[in-house]
Image (cartoon, rainbow, N blue to C red; front, side):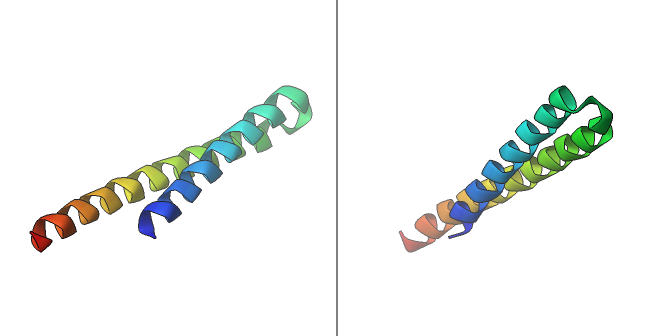
Amino acid sequence: MLMKNALYILFLGLLCILAGMGVMIWAGDKFYLGIALFVLGLVYGLAGTLLYRRAKKRAATQTDSKE
């Protein structure tokens, strides 16, 4: 479940990055909004990556403890 949530957060980060780039390109007067969305996407991407690594580490330790 934790890994699934991490992948959702990574996907949300990717969408925010793409939306930020789109706003910066097509709406020049809202350039700062595009930068804010881009940074938000980077934060979500970092959080998703860290959560994914933690979930992988937890799954590896659980399989080791069962053996």
